[in-house]
Image (cartoon, rainbow, N blue to C red; front, side, top):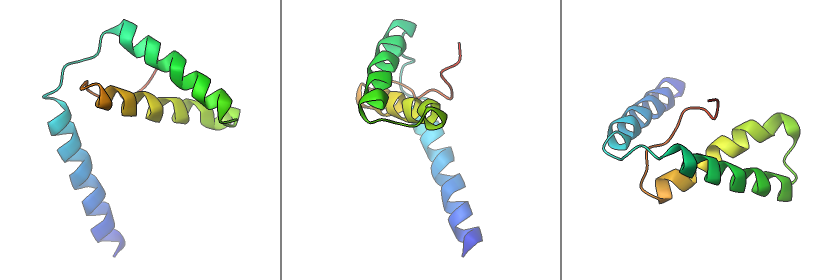
Length: 77
């Protein structure tokens, strides 16, 4: 069962990467704007400091997807 789940996750990740490549890359200014918004959400949601980076990255990628842009792998410049 674990192998089946792992295979599914890998397949979905590959599918998302292929589908995502058709979308435009977001300008740096847009990413920075979204990052600031997501950091405010993290503060409002009282996210623990050790979880904040992951929270913000997920938030940024959700917003990028909603705006029709490619997701990013990290927030490091």
